[in-house]
Image 1: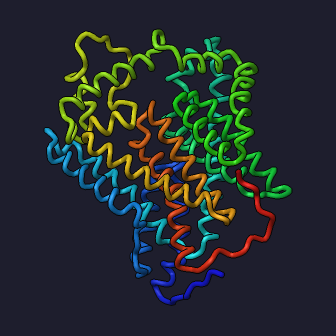
Image 2: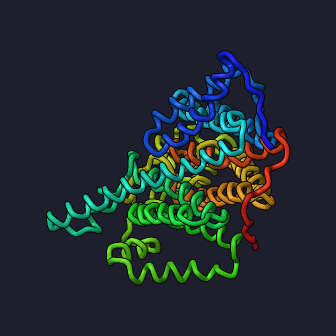
Image 3: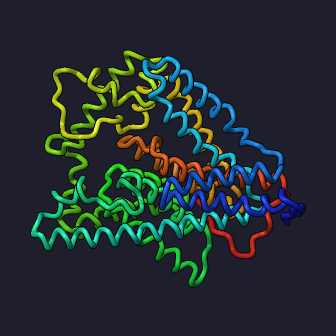
Length: 421
């Protein structure tokens, strides 16, 4: 049974408010990154004022220190260090790991925070679907072809400024919710409620037209289904095929464009980014061209013989390529080390006898798989909103494990458990 020692005065009040501020900071990432970072600052200040001993996940300590250290080294070796300072400031979002790990005194608080994230994601998805209906009807009234005028110009963004940010966040919420649906034995109306939340999020993901996120969501879903019932894995390809057959022509066209490397300028530009990024890495294998310098240096390293499709070349639209080109091959290896430690902790949690621990562990691994696959087509690790939401999801198993160690054994479940293959 979990117990806490209540404390009076300012530290006691801060102790009680920090979990709420932390949850609000995470939820706010779906609506406003400015609000999310303000709330994160407040949560961090509240944590410090609570005067609790601050700990950090041992498994992440060294890879994260190496991550920060090599970023600073890359900045020092850059030809324009001042230009890279925004990437140093962006390290602030990593404080979500520290706050989540230390803020909560009960595992139930962590569980409620994760479910609040699902509700916020559902609201954001519904808003995005409203945008889609409005834009579809507007194009119809103007007599304009939908596909050509929707892609790149009118894709839904929810409360975010870009469809890739919106869809990247929805992918993480979808995988968190799917883990809850599959591995937690919901009963009665509550089970129906979570299934109803799953539907608008899935529809908004489709309506976002973000193909890389589609593939990331598919990969994360595949992981969850393999861990839940491997024999049901056939449902995924069958479901994708059925969805394609019943989809409207414009959705079918978007799916087909994934494989189009001739007419699709987005795909062609990514091939150019790949070759240019490799040139950058070959020229600067140790420290890269410097934080925030890929866009500025792009045309210096672009192969002269290659045409330039219409696209945005501020970064390389690929986590692995971007990090290696920007900060060097050692930095990419450090990042993969960090990701491995995150996935390892989630995998350990997913094998727990406790149902909620399993759910949160599976969600962390699925979110990581989704981020890695979608990151082949977009620099989602550099998107502050997506990164902050991801760090929240993956930090929960670490905090859960800490509370289990500090507070004693997990309370017995009051329901029949789910068989896990």
